[in-house]
Image 1 (cartoon, each protein chain N blue to C red):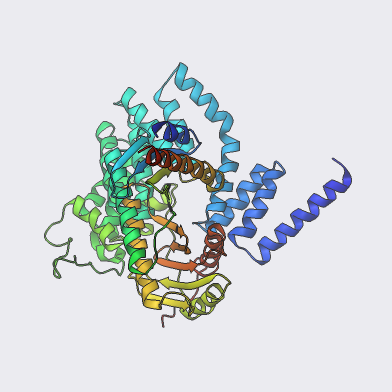
Image 2: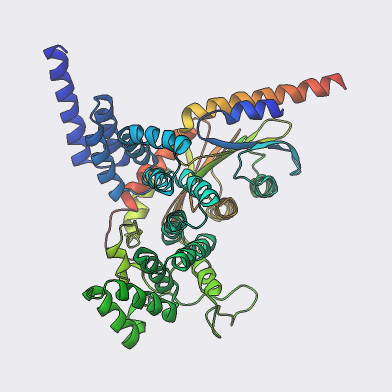
Amino acid sequence: MRKILKGLNEVVGIRGSMVISDDGMVVASCLGRKLDEERVAAMASSVVMSTRRALERHGIRNFSRFTLSSSHGKMIFNDTGIAYLVVVMDKNIDLGPTEIEIESAAMRIRAMGEMRLSSQ
Amino acid sequence: MSILRKVKQIRELGRLRSEARTSPTPGTIGALAERFIALGRTEDAHRVAEAGLRRFPTSERLLAVSTFAKKQRLTAEITSLKREMGERPTPAVYSRLADIYRELGNFEQALSICEQCVERFPLNENPYLIIGEIRLTRFLQDQIAFDGLTAEKQLRRVVKLNDQNMKAHLLLAWLYHCIGAAEETKAHVQSALRLTPENPELEKFLRELETRPQAFENALEPVASEEDEDWDPLDDDPSIEDLVRAVETRGGFRNRPETCPASRLLPSSIGGPTARLDVEGLKRNLRDVGHRPGVSNALILDRDGEILADCSQTDGLTRKQFSDLVAEILKTSEDASRRMDVGTFHWCTVEGAFGGIAINRVKSISVGMKFDTSLRPDRAQTLLDEFAARNLTAPAEVTRA
């Protein structure tokens, strides 16, 4: 899984990526020098859980992707089915092509999870 | 190039210019700037994009075009400076490279270069000055306490290393003035005047600070905390840290940034006055968004989460349900932005089997929309972008329903 994240991080403008479980535990992480793993994990877990709770309260099942843009950076939280892929990016990144890379990484992570389940 | 092709290009450019002039939106201005880039006219592209950004400061499309055009211009210099950094690193090389990245809006890279310079040349004031300036710019734009506190720390380091640094004194005076630290403001204005004795603007400002300090104050009242109704962080001799944190809590400065002469003596980007709203106009125009195929809810919230305008279809959530949902997602997004030190929240999209929810924020106003799977999320975001650009960035007379 770390290899997938490392490959993803080579995309221009991606500062780091991480996979967290449904309950907020870090499964794998590959973050740039300036990103603190604990801080990113805490933030990601909070976003995923708060958003899921808010949606459920209003009768909406779950989200597949949450994209957030701020004045100095962007973040994407992508549901891979077994966990959430969290990607932190530069502000100026063009989301279109990057989303394809992120979706591809998410699919590979999902496939890993399905393989593990079928081998148990 | 054939004459026919050239004529086609000129016609196309003319059409895009006319569209951008008669119906200025991030889309039409962006299209014109992108055409200039395709034609290799990067200076024109940069000029058009910058003009567009003055009108639509949060447009990502215009920002991307402007940054691309600037980068084209500065690529050769970046390459040369990086080579010099490897061969003959000096503080001047680091500073120039950091300055370029700052000009390109790549604050993270600029800060990283400065940190490398600090490691190699810890007694050189320039990297601390650049870090302080970047953090102060962000504090003025986003009002996040961490930026203000870091700016203060770095700029104080500059004056400790070199008390003759006029720029650092002016920046500190600006920071202290915005947060309401009058004595500290006066001290640094006096230091700046010692370095440039005949500066009428600074002299006038100092006189006003001494005789009429309340002349600069904005209309914001102190906001009490949730725990204690009577709490005011600005009572009882607050520290600088208290004053900086009060800016974030209150969502505004004690004194308006533009009232400090530093805002004119130094190049910087200060957010303009908040767009004033025509609420009836907003309601009318929101209906256009809310009645689009695929959209079930649309609303506008003010800073306090009150509904300014709303358009809910029968197959959507109720008005209350949707405003609660938008408020919760907004709070989550703002918290995440603050914790990750990525500035203020601009927009978000939540996608799922239900379709999606898109939220944009312009200054203190939030626009939210719920849509089904027939509308693409990027298209939904563009709709909100264009709505915000048309209705929330052009000044108009305030009438609040």
